[in-house]
Image 1: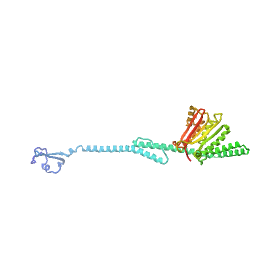
Image 2: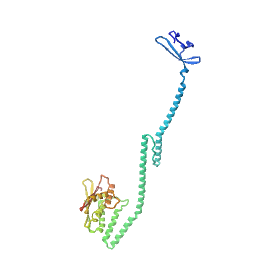
Image 3: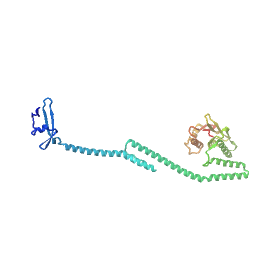
Image 4: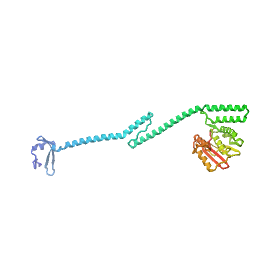
Length: 365
């Protein structure tokens, strides 16, 4: 410690004081040892304090700190690399596997992608792909089965083509044979049967839609054949405005209901006369026709009516009976028309008062 005139007050420095006072550096070499100089002058007393500290004392333990920093850096780098690897594996591996699976799907192999732990987004993407693959595989299987069924059906159709041709030739030969023998009544029945089969058997290139007058003519031929069984006690009439005769309906929509009325509601279940009426009229709704088949048969009670409705709904479609014909007509209504376009089959019946079966379809010309 020195006063204002740089005279020592307290000192344990044994070296050259002038070197200390005249150095501009904060370090000083004394006896081959480097010292760090720290000085401070008091504003109150004007005294100056000089502190010399060996640099080796200041840097003592620095190597340990440096070694610790290096080791910590190495450990940090290792932790970073390991974390980066696991993080990239956790995210990129599912994406890589999904990409590989989707590439295979592009080659026609729609395999399910295994579900492995990953982020919610990747899991959702994986589940969406698996659902898409499952639905696509289902559709492919359905298309394959339908194509196989189509091929089998076409084969059977080709195999069966000879049968209608043979049937028509046989009926024609029978008709001419009966005509030569002047069996006019039987000849007319055979002719009606031949025309009935020609109308019923639809060829691949023929239209499924026919005019109402064609359907009524088909019913007339059917009635002519049924009179061989029931005789004169079976009769029918048609109530239709002339303007609706050219309207088009799907083929065989009325005749099955007439057949059902004869066999199950009229001549088949009563001893007396059987009368069937086919009524075709325009409804209150615009552009819609109501087609009704009415018989004077024994009718049905509510329990029987519910049973027939269940048969028509298809609950027992494997069974034979009045519900089967109605079920088939109802099924064809569903196929040919949109739900809002038509009214399904409605059955109205009362014991000993007959039965009325009706449905409504749009008018088409």
